[in-house]
Image (tube, rainbow, N blue to C red; front, side, top):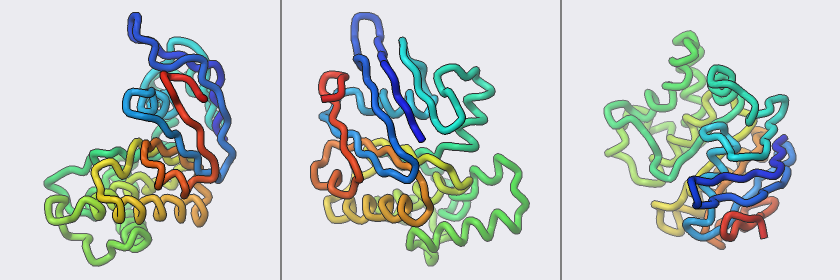
Length: 216
């Protein structure tokens, strides 16, 4: 599903990634482990087309991500990838249901289909009874569940999660990783999750480690 070949990323004299290469099979949960500053976020941004490498290539399904122009990148992200970030990224003035529905509004999904999809996703992440609550009324773990539901709104083939449990206590973090594990299993999604927590990598099918920008 994902192929990374000879990926390098530099900012001036700062070499963030050095000749990184690996593959991820369809339906696999890959954990990218490494300390802060090891290049995990940069790697995920390159895979998801949020940034461009200095050299190398990324292929995701039928998309050669690193050769796409801005319009094609936007289409690829809209059709293929769901993103989950450590900071949740929810819109404060919107309810949980409205946050989950944002991607569907952007693609002008009809209201009835959108509302049904939102109900299904909130039930899937265990928040059916919290649809009308705003982010500040939810716990950190609940907010991350909303963020995961939003990432799945358009049925992506790939889920990219950057330190999705970094702001959560260990028990809540485990429940979030178990949820991601269940999504991979039940929805057939391919997931790449960056984490520095050794307890969380146990949920992964496979682990790669970044040290000083290289796979070790």
